[in-house]
Length: 610
Image 1 (cartoon, rainbow, N blue to C red):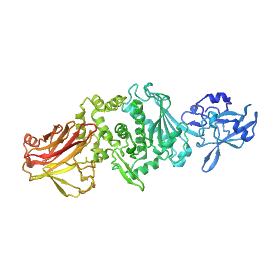
Image 2: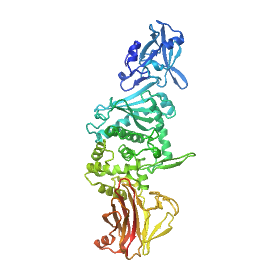
Image 3: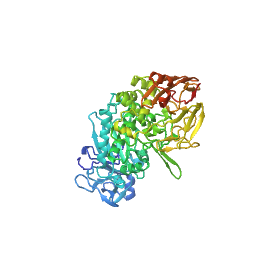
Image 4: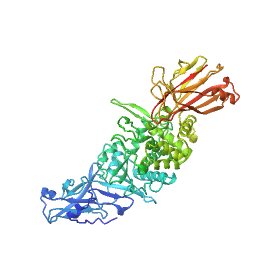
């Protein structure tokens, strides 16, 4: 521990150092890195209390504990220190506090009088705090620091070992991303970032534990202290043309936070484990840190655009890359063992003055698959699982690296990273969704079935069914994607679709896929020219047909291309003939209609020709 002896400084020396702080920092990991409290008695203070040049001033410090004022001691056990006023009726000194001191908001006494916060013209930032930190340094030179005060943690009811748990989880998260999963390209990784683009000058990821309700007062955060209302979240502090300090804000009452989250967003996996959720939260935010220094594309659109727990504020958002940063971060939670939010289907909570809802994870996507790709958020985690499973983490890192300055070139970047045509990747993803083919092993049971429009084909045409089993005759053309049932949710005719989009027309959004199940009655004897028509212009629709037989086989026709304004056969007759089957052998077909236009929806219809 550094000696606590006071170092008397001249006013000129003190004011010239813009880094001097009126806060104190106790480093629990490396004592020699502790930063002292700078005490400054100004001429204004001296005039207010009648102190004169040459007078000795007794200094003490206290923090409130359990409603009582507690005097603080330095490493040598002293609880008071002496300053001598100079000819200008001012004095400065530094106090290094003992590492076991209770930390929080400070009160400084001079000759028993309260020493107010430093005046704005003193050169010392206003506000005082004893702040503690736990620290870890990696072999690559990057560091993690967990900042907290005993006071904030006590008020939040945090357990005694919470700060150690946070540091351990953060270390594991960083290592998983930069070592175990290989996100470490030179010039793009956090520890070796491109200084001409974006880098953290001290290569330190600072994690702050605070409260939305309390006065946190972390001096380095400044006005960003208010962002604790959105915690957990990631942010940056811009300190130069290409310098950004990485900051993660975590609720001091994290245990209570997770329990409340569990109540409003129940998971099919059952009860949450706080330790596992903490690892998941920190790898989510840590990936935001790493991704920012790859390409700076995690810029917030509004001050309200933040809550990682999923409060949707899309009305105030500008179009940016949540499908990438939030979807990928949600998937990375599973690499830390946290799976609850990955499988979440979200929630809707009716409050007296508003509706609060979360878009959830992969099961939100399974319920609402017809969304324009660029409008996806956390639910796009399933796509990143698909990319990782099929093409490896190297492809994801390649994409992240190549997004720098090319945010609108997703199609080209994806093709370069995977070596596959974009249209083929969209089709492969759609079929993986249909068959839950993501290598999830026993976890596949937590992934719900994809939402499908359910039609039945009879001799006289198409019928649509609602969630109660009622049928509606559509004629010899079917142009609807209305969904009457998904999992336990049901809707009757006349009610909004229970899943998918909110329209009744058969339209598929940009870079999305509609899923339609066509049932066949056993009395069906023949089908002439069952097909699909692309209504309108635009890029061709890519259609895949999976024909299920009553014997349990699945026959495929995955190469149907439907240009704008044209109709194409679904090829059911050819599939049956090729496999020596008859119409009576058909049970159902699931038809996947993929739109390769990035933004514009495309309309379609099914038809029967005699």
